[in-house]
Image (cartoon, rainbow over the protein chains, first blue to last red):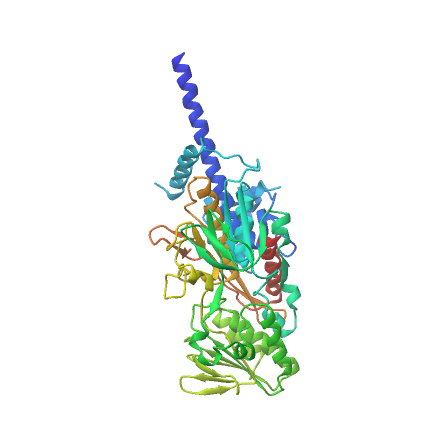
Length: 101
Length: 423
């Protein structure tokens, strides 16, 4: 019984830790995405003139950013911006924007 | 340990530590007050984002102007393409949408020990954390002829958008065809590095249409054009042949206001319209509060929080800070400072760890005529070893050429960043 209790306790802590890591990623995604918001709108809600990222599919955002990064997708400016971000950072930003309503 | 893992661990530890004291979020109870001084690109953004990310934090913004007027795009007022109204945005939504208390007043003193600010008209405000975004002040003491207010109304800076911008446009309208418009540029660093060169383009755009025998003379204290050099020199040559003359190493020593003469070290230059952008330092309130720590001009900060290196619980943003190398004093960068600071202020007030890997961007458009623009872009990330923000290698860059599509993006940039600050 004691064993079971401690097992529950440990898994509880693990679940909590996983939650905390997710929370840290969420804050990271939020903070990184906030830089993009100057052009692409607060939380991705752009006004006309720029691409609105809110609610965009995560895989699609990652794909487009990778295409900017490699030069496959033509751009005036985004190819220069995309090269400033690691793959992990792009994934966090894409995840954040995909979750905005 | 990888940096990202370290951040996760640090944040997780902080999250665990924070649980017992978890404040009620959205329950209406305030956990403290942030006062923001100055509602420009940095201050307005900070006020909005602190409320958005910390709804249990009370935010008061003190701004002396009744509306926000953008410096970026204001050179288009000189060419005639825009009016000041096009660049003006209300502060109302900060209150109605985000619950920021906006006070139209001026902060005259900061007491860091008591954590209070004094207002010119209203009663003093107390704060838990203060965000100071005072912009720049002009060092008129370096130009004796411009030391009085009357002289400053004849020889304009037009480097804070508003009445001066309109007055400079009027001077251009009154200038005879065949006259000389001279613009004096101070040694870097100054607010908006490409701005003076953009101004030369847009004044030339107006003159070439209406007063084609006139001349634009650029008197630059620097050794060379300090931003977008190739793009601007190409624009002067291709778009305004024979009209724009650029002189490097031409630092202004004094001005004779009566004869509109710019006095340089080795020569005097007479103009019909003389536009002097004076050397600059952090806005006056920063000096009074003891926040200036570098060259008697700029405020040193910790780049993870933008907290002053001189005073705890006071953060400084925007053009007033001692910027990291290669980081320009631009509206876009000020907006980015504000978000790093807002995240840190919210974390600190909740007893959580500060995000340790901020990445920020600069995107800066300049018009070379009424429709075509060029840009410079950069990405900076926190450099743990140097405790600074450093450019990410191989990122950022310049336009390949001036185009109409970038002119449209420049407009889109403005509408979006204004909405990000105030909408």
